[in-house]
Image: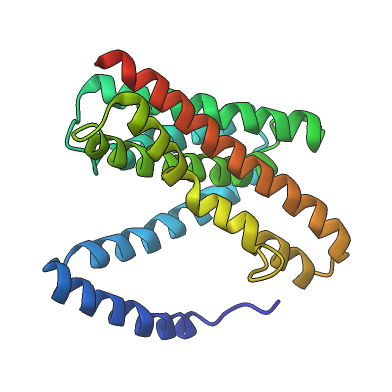
Length: 229
């Protein structure tokens, strides 16, 4: 694919501006989308330059450092939407995302892809990003919903509702893939000339690790957070 001209990126401001307008009118918050969009651009530029350095310096230490940053930041993002922002809650979030995500990360890079060396940042960093991001989203949905459900129901009832609700986006993606949508990774591989059936295999791995990491992370969160009660 050809390089996207920088000025062409400005076209994407059109839909973002429309969303910002309704977000401001309906929620009375003019800053969050502007802040999130600005932060998104800055973070992507920074990681772009960082990845150039990381890929040129094939070090397990750098890969591990990036993973620790992913876990720490994703946990903070989950915590920001909660009313209960205690150190214990944060530690539970970190534990859930770290264990739920890392189990799937090791499984994929060591046994499925059989990477040699297994810590090669060019592969580990983007795979880890997908895994921890999906764990973060699932735990965020679970944690926020759990706080509300506990006000009107028992732990067991809340757990049932929360576990199902937190996995709805991921399960919907499973149901839609190949029919409603072609995932980004698969589309990128096909556009780069890879055989579609080979791309399908990789996408199956991606989909499985996304649901696996999200589900395990939510399970761990719900089990650990109950000990605080």
